[in-house]
Image (tube, rainbow, N blue to C red):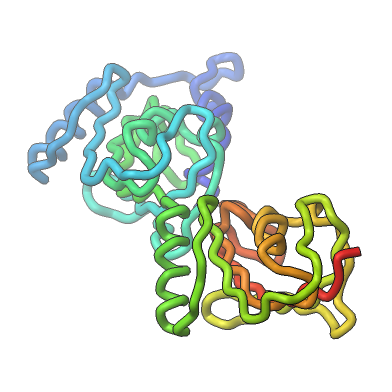
Length: 276
C-alpha cells in the first residue's frame, strides 16, 4: 500500500471537488477532538501547527535541513489512532521529492533534519480528504511514525565498519570518499578530464558483486563517470591498484539505478592500467 502515502498532491483534491456531484464534508472538528484525545491518552509531547497538523519531534536530527522542495528518504509506519496499522516501510526506506506527497508530510517533515525521527499526526484535510481513498476511509486521521534517513551518516558508519572488519589502511577525503592504495604505480596520475583504462570489480559491503570488467579493462573519460571514480582514480598513478569505498552521495544517490539500490555504499577494486 506504499503508493497511498506517496500519492501525488493533486489526488487529495479529487474527493473535495463538487464539480462531479461529490459533496465535501468538513471533518476538522471531529479530527481535532480525535487527535487531542490521542495525544492525551498517549502522553505525547506534541505541538499543533496553524494548519491543524500535530508534530512530535523525538530527535531533530543532525543532517541536512529539509525544505518543501527537498528530496528525502524516509522509513515510516502509518496507523489510525486506534493503533490499526495501515502501512509500514521500516526496513526498506522510500525516497521522493516532498512536492509529491500529502500536505501533512510536506509541512511536517520540515520540522526535522536528516537523521531525525518522531510522529506526524495528520488530520484528513492534510491527508486524503473526506472521501474514501485506496482503502483509507474518508475523514481519517493518520498517525505516522517517521525516521528521516541521513545517508551521509549511515554510509560513513557502514564504510568505517567495513574498513575495521577488513583491517584496511584507508584514507578519507573531504568529500566522504575513502580509498586504499595497494600499489601506487609508477606512471603518471590522471586528471579529472583524462581518458583512462581501468580494470575493476564492484561490490557492496556484504561482498555481493554487482559488476566486473574483463582483464583488458574498460576505457572512458573520467568526467563521464560517477564522482567517486572521478575523484578516486586521481589518487593512483598509472599501474597502480587499490580500493575505492564510495558513499551514495558520490555514486547513485538516494534513488539508485536498476542494479544499485538507493543509498548504497559501493566498493571497487581498481587497477589503473593506462592514462591514455
